[in-house]
Image 1 (cartoon, each protein chain N blue to C red):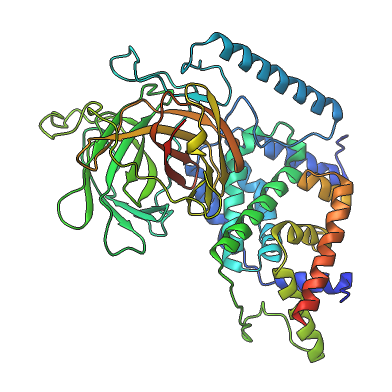
Image 2: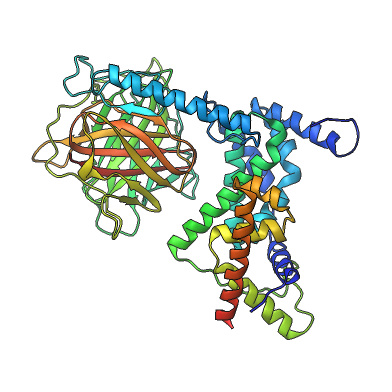
Length: 190
Length: 353
């Protein structure tokens, strides 16, 4: 990658330098590197897991793992994909753990909570959105991760392939399968 | 029933919008100041390059290492594996000529202490269904520390012993094993006086209890009383084969596997290769950095378990399915403990040929 003093690559150069410093144990550099990412990481974990406490815990675990294993990252310019892979893996582990514990959280929307989505609009849309979410929750960890990376993170097939370390063709077929599984679950729910 | 892209996006946006990241940055910032980074010669979680030449090189390097391992194994006597062998651990034969029972560890690392507070409270650690409590003072060699165990979900406590195994590190390359009986009464109270400083695995072992934590004991101050007067054990206790091996529960419908919570241990105790390298595989739900194997043996007539052999460690590649080579010198009752940055996992298996 060619670094210039302007545009996107300036930020990437800065981040690569921060990653390099964090690799050598610089806690402040690690904080500078991760601070702008934490909220997005929690949103991604929340989208995959669906439980706020679990999502926060998962991100914390992922951040700790990123810190611990940073010295093993040989190419700091690949930090973004590498860290993203650790987060996805942490989310998958959390879901597998939750599945084995057979704990199913029932979320009750709080009308006073500003983070609760607005229920304005046709009642059918709200009912359908909840049905889609239930169907999504019935999917396995890999399918959820794929759908979130594609529809929530807006990553391209190539970027997803790099993130999950699988071929692009596999991403395509698994994404299709995940979509079909979601539709089947929705049919079963209705 | 068809779902369009926008419906999925909308649902995921709504779902992720409920996330709250407040306070997370501060807690992570505090945590990383106390968590050491992993430095390995062999990268285990590094970014994968998309360049084919690197992949080819990696395959070549792995093949070279495998060839080296095979050649080395062919030249070495059974049960002895040198420190240069990657991913392989051995336990020296019981006929070792080393009078102290100690051996050089194949992989000397730093001490991966189980974080206090992982049980939910600042003063406790919860691993494998057991809550460990000890005092707020730091662990110090030759200074007794009161330890209380609570087995979750049980009113009647196991007849549990604590087995302490010193894990070899660069600072303390030798191993030691000591057992501690519990105090009198129904509570699971122990007085643990570690004979020497270093990195110690404390394992609570009983018929249905298998749990361990890793602590680091500091050098004793010069003012500490003579260890003999404190009745602190100073050497490995005499041992005889265990009368009953406190094996871990097996996974339903999957013979040969042991369960510790969500961790699956593919020990296959009925088909171990003795005196040769055999694979131990773990379905890990925690990050695992080292795995210790220690024979569990005890007196015929009492439920006292002692590690009679030096334990060894081997690096394990992150989380997920982990496999590693172990050379066990003989059949018998073995404890396996996987240690990671956040927790440990412990199983006991009766290894047979």
